[in-house]
Length: 272
Image (cartoon, rainbow, N blue to C red; front, top):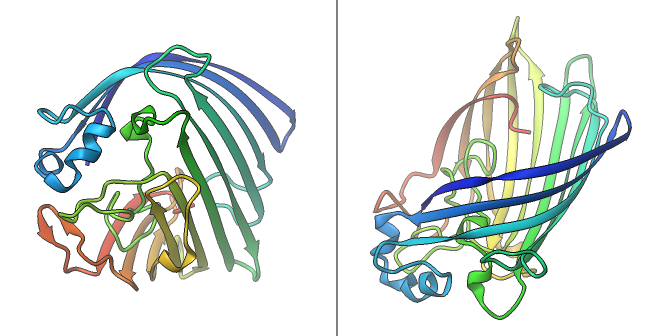
């Protein structure tokens, strides 16, 4: 949907009061240039929205300086960073750009999530996660939120069964355009097979909504399927087959109507 080039720096202060908790405050300043794809630029149904977002309708580009401060808290009791079997991870983040900071954008965002791992047998693991977030413009102009800060879902570590960035609001031509509110989650049953091989069965769900702080659980998209794992020193190598339980009507992929309800995903590391 878009490409992003940025140049800048970040200052981070990190405090770890105990082995499980980390508090972080960061300040960043970046010059960013985002460009939407030619396919999206030709979609007249979102032309007015792209202009409202500050994108030049002639070349699909927007550029500006982003200055933001963020506060993040994390708690991690998982027993393994690469392939957890027990414990949990909690995180929350609030970010503000603009206002008393220089720059072209003015917004604030809030996000929180959690993951839980439960070993129910000698090597059987039940894993689950959920995360939610919203981003909102500080002021009446929608372009105060840069296009690349919108939420998108879909892909090997998101809602499997859809390709990267394919889940969420779509234009009149069926192109994913992202949104300002996100909710997603997953549940997995992880079990050993033989040697270094293992298998999973998973259910993913979630969606993205166009407006800030606005969501409807009836709009959730669901996907499910099996997966295969091979354990290596750098983490599991995985292959997942995701099947869309409720496809997105009108979605187009590579300019063509989406007819395939499945995806095969390959990656390194567990999905979460």
